Image (cartoon, rainbow, N blue to C red):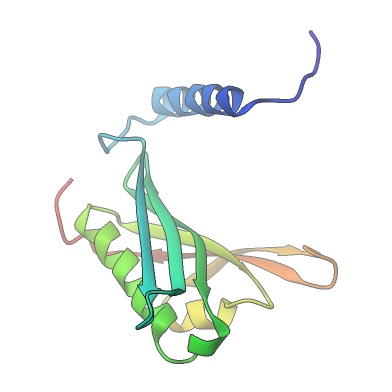
Length: 144
């Protein structure tokens, strides 16, 4: 064996092998493995001022990868609006769980106010800070 850098094609292959293994352990509950749930807010000029990148994966579980709000729009409800919309879309698709991670210098308190709970903390990531892993149960609005 020899160790090499992976290409984009290799990454897809490796990911598909992991998904294949996962399904051998827990059968899929959704037709497509990964379903994007991406939303943005634009201002009157059409410029993006906030956005959320999320996905529903394998078993009707949603993960928020990025939620960003421009500093000029913070504390005006933009983050809550995006989060509620992603949660609504996920729940309508049958999700019962959504999760994310955030740093102590980002939006931990915001997520707590939105009903998320901390289920894990990674200390010294980066040094002098913590990374929080958070989750929220959703009431599915639609069927699977």
